[in-house]
Structure formats: C-alpha cells, structure tokens
Length: 241
Image (cartoon, rainbow, N blue to C red; front, side, top):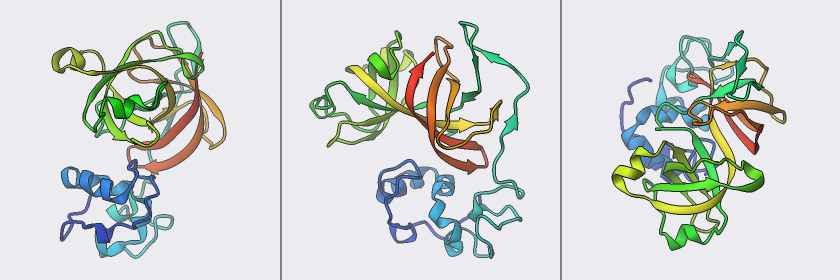
C-alpha cells in the first residue's frame, strides 16, 4: 500500500454507499480506515481516484500493469487464485470445490444472519463488537453446533447482522448475548485455491475454513471481486450437504 500524503476524509470517498467494501455507508468505511488504512483497496470506485492513493498512477484498474496500490494490485497481479490438484473431502467423505478463507482483518468467517425474531436485534441492543451466540436452524443450514461470534455490522431496522464466527472461548471469557435461533443468509470470504472456475450465478460446494464439523456447504456465488489476497466472494442460498 502506498503511503498517503494526508489522512483520507469523507470527501475523498465516493459517497455512493454501495456496500462493496463491506460497510453499508462510506461514513462507516471511513471509521474503519482510521485503524486500518490498507482497507482503502476495498473501494473499487477509488481505482480512478489517483490523487487519493497514488498520484503517479495514470491507468485504470483494468489497464494497470505496474502493480501500484491505487489499482489494488501487487507486482502487476490482480489476484491470486491457484488451481487445486488436491481432492478435498469433508468428514462424511463428500467432495467440495474450495475452502472459504476469512479476510485477513477478521477474526473468523464472515456470516450474514437474520434472527428468527428480527426484533431481538433491537431488544438486545446489539452493537458492533458485541459477542453473540446462536444456532442456525432450518432450511438455511440446520447446523447442530451453536455458533459464537463478534458483530461487525448491525441493521437495527431489518434485524440483519454481520458477524465473524470465532468459537466458544470468547463467550466463555467475556460473556455474550444469546440470539437463539437464526437464519444463515450468506457467507463472505476469500478463495485462494479452487478446483472449479468461479462464476457469478453458479452454485458450488465449499467448506468454511474453521467449520468445527468440517462439513461441506453449498452456496450460490452472487458477487466476485479480485483482490491481492484472493478472490473475494459472497455466497447465498446456503445449504449443508
């Protein structure tokens, strides 16, 4: 990442509130940039804002061959995804296409969830940084394991939450808020190695890297972004099996 000549302000961001960076609003993204400036690479609209990132850049992200930071590339490489030769199998001996890795800045896989009673998001006054527990019930997943995680985003109006699934040690040590049952709406993460070409609109078998049961999931890819860390994807319509 290039060194910025000045701190990024809200005026530097596009103001589109498109959500592609992982935040609902540009103002929320700006807050995260204060602690982790390298996240600026997630703003696709800034690939043409050369004055903010790298004043020497004269190319768009599509045409950049030099690997400058403003195009989100490294050494001319737009993304790193290796073809896998290994045949991955889950604990029930079922094959899957790839592991879904979590983002480097996250403590675990990013899961988009909706409590079976969406009002509970407001009743429990759930805030970013809260530790939660709950279990995905029914058609969305039906996982028998209670999930634990740290909240990354909250929509008080709809009740939708984005959390990073971590494990039971945090709730045991720090306490938690109990969601009860919830619907797993989607996963977001990185693919660094895959047995299949990834395309929007296709369904794939995958396994979240930290799945305690080591069971394969299936999901429909409806978003792809090429990053230096790997292929960023969002999978919805989740099933186990």
